[in-house]
Length: 131
Image (cartoon, rainbow, N blue to C red):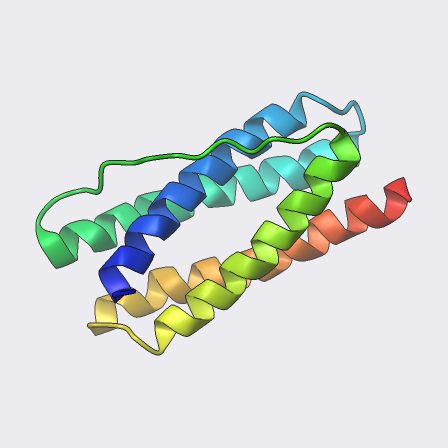
């Protein structure tokens, strides 16, 4: 898979996560959970926007988003899905750093990678308190 294909998948994934977390926030009344999920949701939108801009710099156009849908049966299952997705995204962005086509790709990838690790910590905290 090329760097550009990975970037396009990441754009789709970031928007999917933003929508997923927006829905997930409404499924809890715990203020700490809401704060953690909202933080991740807002970061996902920033990642989406910075990746779209990077796509524009590389191709001269924005990527047509093809968001996915996250299916789950319970809040607990959704948190576990979010945790796994965040860890996977951090690994993806780490790997993409080694394939950067230009220096402009460094900042959005590095920021997203470190944010995803932070999100994983937040979702891990929520998941641990649910068990």
